[in-house]
View (spheres, rainbow, N blue to C red):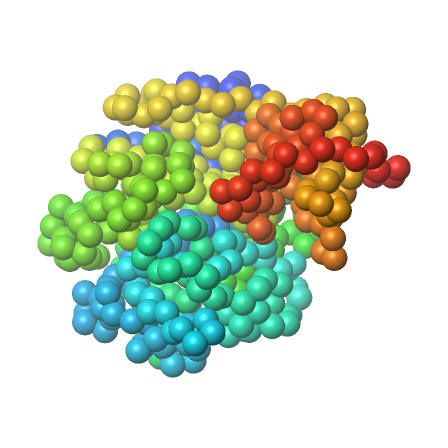
Length: 456
């Protein structure tokens, strides 16, 4: 059942929403729309957990995933406003608990500007999280890449300031930097700097999620719409992926950025820093809504007029988009692994219903190769020389095993393209071969032999 609270997208397309939830096997969705600087619509559909009747509401908590990053960046910019940090100073001069390590005999200089614009040359693109209830690593353990951390250490391997490369590891450095400079735990600090001042009462950087919040939280689901075994993952990488929130709260945040840019009295940021944040620093890989540049914490259209960020944690997908000129925008959050496809369609509907100027309305349909096609692609592929890798189809995703490595999960991107979030690696099937795509390199890999047990 669709539960919009005002006339708008929800009422207009009830049947479409219901069909979409079934099509994409996403149990629940929540959205909110800005028009003229005011909340014009809130809506929700579906359930918080498949198999249960508890409905998603406008106060259901979802993991914001990487939308945590711009909120973190704004907290850091507030400290710049206060003179506690500098945008262009070496962050190692402020870091106390951990330092960006040297590379051989070379000590790279990394700045806050580079960290929040993904141009610091740091490693670790994203974080897979940890099943709820397991022992979580400390920030220091994650930065150093030591157990129980499940990612490699954060290191510089590209000259800082020379190019965009998305790095959750850089945002984790910001988390440590803010704690070192203020002496305040990150969760408390973000409450004091951003969430509290903006009245974001349904938002919290809390991992593990406190038990008294469980009843309010949506459960994460896999790409078949099944609840994940532990309900959701925990992300001690709070700054990069740890925000629980709602679409309404995210739009309050977006409006605060516009007010800061406009120089409204009492706004969260000085107009100078807000305008710096919404000024393109570098071209970036494209995001939903025509975002092709990176500012300070935000992805932007090349002219800087529209800003936003997407997010995807285990079993959650979401997107935030807003205009600094028109006061229009939206936030859409889902609790399914296929939610990015649904988010894409919903933004198209919102843009059409509210007359968003210049919004790219083309919607890429999700076409899933049949199980028989994917099972037929299972096998060993030659990467180079004598090096091969094995591809297995599980029925929902690819398991790809490279020499000496545990299997990596590759999920559908579109058509015949699959990607692994952990390594920013893609496989593009061009039967009977596959293209291995990584770090700008494309290698055509011929199929050597089938895998006897494909897992189907």
